[in-house]
Amino acid sequence: MSQFTRLLGIAVVALTASGCAPNIDDLVAYTNEVRQNTKPSIEPYPEFEQKPVFVYDAQGFRSPFVRPKASRAPVVAQVKANCLQPNANRTREPLEAYGIDALSLTGSFRSNGDTWVLFKTNDGGLYQAKKGSRLGLFFGQIISIGNDKVIIEELVPDG
Image (cartoon, rainbow, N blue to C red; front, side, top):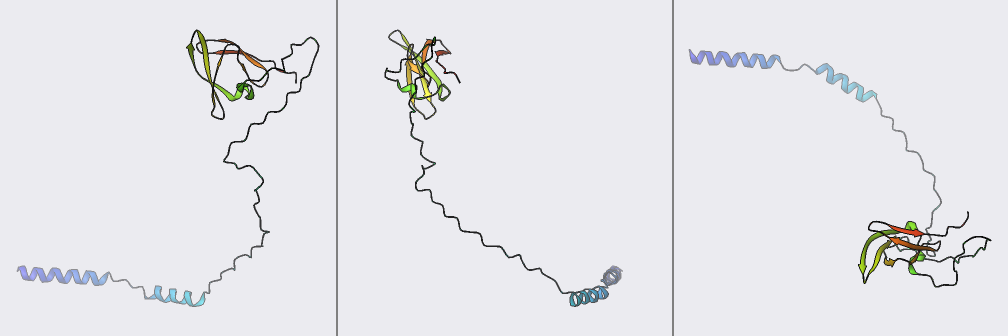
């Protein structure tokens, strides 16, 4: 009986599998007909107009990878009556080549009773100054030095 059951099972599976065979002959015929009757139309790519050639010529310019050289513009003394005037004849200190906005307070220290401050410039320089030192583009002078602040007095010209 087991052999008969086995043969019967194989027959059922074979008949079921043969019934699942796809009947796609009409679909294949339709696909072949469409392929024969349809011709693909490919549009030609657009012709690009020739642009004039650009020649990069920057031999005379400063390299963008090198820091610009500092240039000091001469200070033109404008004398006004009843106004405090700076001493234009004295020698200028190194920090007077930088604007106040180009300086950042880096630290402070005491040495021989004097309080010194360290300023870092925007070009990476580090300078020390004490009370009375000059800095800034407008004849600035350090008036006092605190633990967390420096008071500077500048002569700002009229606009």
